[in-house]
Each structure stands twice: as C-alpha cells, then as structure tokens.
Length: 269
Image (cartoon, rainbow, N blue to C red; front, top):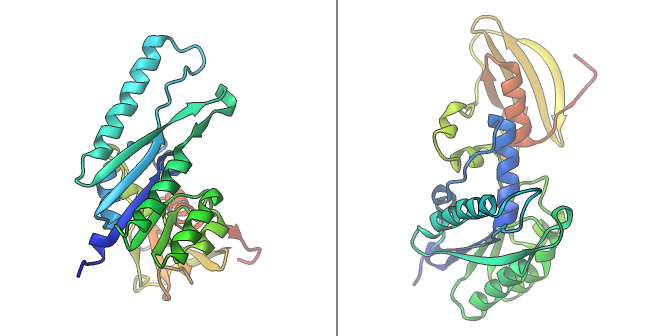
C-alpha cells in the first residue's frame, strides 16, 4: 500500500507564488529575494510537483532586444532550478497584452487539466494547490467530488475565501515559510524572530493593546533586558500565548504583521 507522500502531488501557480514571495521579501529584507524551490518542495512532502508559469519575453518600456534576451535567460535559469528535484516539472504558457494589461494565457487551464488528468488516472490521492485565484474553485470542487483530499496553500490575505472553502484544508503561507524558501546570502541578513511561550521572570511594562482579526496583541517593554515584546493570544498556531521579542520595536511589529496580519490598535493603554 502506498504511503501518503507517494500519493501526494503539488501544483504551483508560479505567477501567484512569485507575487507573494516578492511582497514578503521586499517588506522583510527591503529588497526582492531569490526563491529556492527545493525547500519549498520539501515543505509539502510531495512525490511530484508541477510548476506553471510563463516566460515574460515581451519588452518592458524601452528595453533593447539584448536586454530582453538577458532577462529571459535569468527566467530560464530559474525554471531550470525548479526542474532539478526529482519528480519536479515546469510547464510554461505564454504572455499576451500591452504592458499595463499583460496576462498569462493557458497557464490556469494547463494546471486545471493536469490536476483532473492525474486524478482520473488515479496517479494521486492527495493534491496540494499553491494558488490564490477563485478561478480554481471548479477544479478543486471536482477533485473533492472524485474523493481526493485537496489542500490549498496560499497567503491568507490574497487567497480567495471561496477557494479555501472549496478545499478540504488550507495551509497558510506566512513569513517563516518565505524566509525558509529564500536563497542565501539574503536569507541570513535578517534572522526571523523566535516565538516563545513564557515572558522573562521580571515584569515588563505593558504598553499597548491591539488585535489582528480575532487574535489579541499586547506589547511590552522590558528595561532589564532591553527588549520589546509582543504577546499574541489566540493564534491559529497555538492555543497558548506566544511572545516575540527583539530590541528593535519596528522589527517586532513588522514580523507580527507579516506573520499574522495588519494590526489594529485599541484606544486603551
């Protein structure tokens, strides 16, 4: 009998992945990072992965043919790295439209057709779709009806709620995952903050109250260890309070927002 990994296929909307990866790395590091597909693939423990994207080979602005060629070569090198893990495949569509209205052609259709084909051929029993577009709802619903276990992976704020609801489960992509998928040397320039379950023995001074959806947030300052603390209560990751700390207040608050969502501060202090 096959184990779960041998029956799990990962399907990735490359355009969506690039968009959320660039957003996270620009916010956390101040520059766009380079995605390392190998740890991403390991994160989902799939026996095969299928990556769907397109070459952006149309001129941007006043680009010369030589500049376009150089940019395309960088994309091709990236796609080659995605293909490297055993069982990893890249399928490319085309790009059409003017500069301001460019869109991918065939990519979504190829992804949906492949998911249905592998399901019909009983190649997989479990599918993970890394995407956020509600256009994938019909294929997700079809696979669920066929008896497959389907998970959607995506950044919570940019993933369609209806797409999440159509699947059997949702895997949120947050800052910790993105850092793990970022190539060196950028990855080591700004370490992810650790989360702990206990405040220090001394009593930090309570500063502010806030919330992120249903998650409550309290911030503290501790002169004894020169740390700024954020206490997170009611997160989906833990039923007990989590604490994040660093001497840099802005770094802590940026981490909290990228990991959990925008902070709404309460009036009371």
